[in-house]
Amino acid sequence: MTEHPAPDSPQADKAPRTQDGTARPITPGSQAAQGTYRAQPVSFVRRGTRLQGRRQKAWDDHSATLAVDIPRHISDTSVHPDYVFDAAAEFGREAPLVVEIGSGLGDAVVHAAKENPGKDFLAVEVYTPGLAQTIQKIVSAELRNVRVVQANAPEVLGTMLPAGSVSEVWVFFPDPWHKTKHNKRRMVKDTFAPLVARVLAPGGLWRLATDWSGYAEQMRAVGVASPDFDNMHDGERTGSASPLTQARLTGVDCEQSDEPDTGGGWAPRFDGRILTSFENKAHKAGRVIFDLTFRRK
Ligand SMILES: C[S@@+](CC[C@H](N)C(=O)[O-])C[C@H]1O[C@@H](n2cnc3c(N)ncnc32)[C@H](O)[C@@H]1O
Image (tube, rainbow, N blue to C red):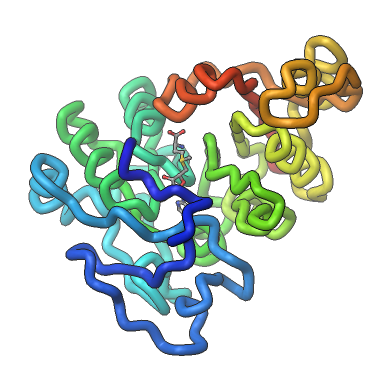
């Protein structure tokens, strides 16, 4: 995914752009102008929205049926707060709904949709080429149980999805924003957990994966601190079995140390999560993969 936005790039605070690449007019002083949602910085940057070739054709031919058409609010990735998604009407049936946040090129969601025809899937992404590529994959696999939505995830979770309507929320390899000065842009933080809790039905699962040890620790802390979730693997994979201990020993993305992780709580690799190009890059760079699963109380 070479044209993927680089979160730490100097262009990170560029104004939103329309699909043809022109700057979108934004109201000075609005949330869009600030790059914020509810006074918090958004977890993405808008770049690389242009489509070409097969991606453009897939978008032109199929976005009307496969991309959820939502009313906007303050920017082209916002969700109007009055809009509520009706999954039964969209998919023409009642089925468990799995929501993938930051679905990238759509590899995980399309694979899962093929494997689970009895479930419906919603891929939430802001990156236009990623959405177009996901649409291409949905069409070529002739899937009827996947939709994509181009929107800022906290707004999808905060207002667009009905409370308690989702069986699983997946957040796989969210942008790490690993420089300390950018940590505040991370999606998974204390204010994000209540949004996930809001949409999940009781017993619903929040699955996470990351290849950055500092972010993994933050995710674990967020889930453990939330009154709405239980860690399904509480106390598991401590000491030498912990991926955090392994990451510390390698020192690839954190200070090298032989201090064991006594907290544990890491999930085994979720077998419904296929290897994406992001994870592949992480393996090549020698980074350790962390999985977490929290259950909605
Ligand atoms: C590092 S990529 C990982 C993609 C995919 N999950 C994978 O594992 O291949 C993170 C993705 O999250 C998307 N993203 C970041 N913040 C988002 C937000 N607030 N709402 C929706 N998508 C977001 C980015 O555009 C990017 O495609």
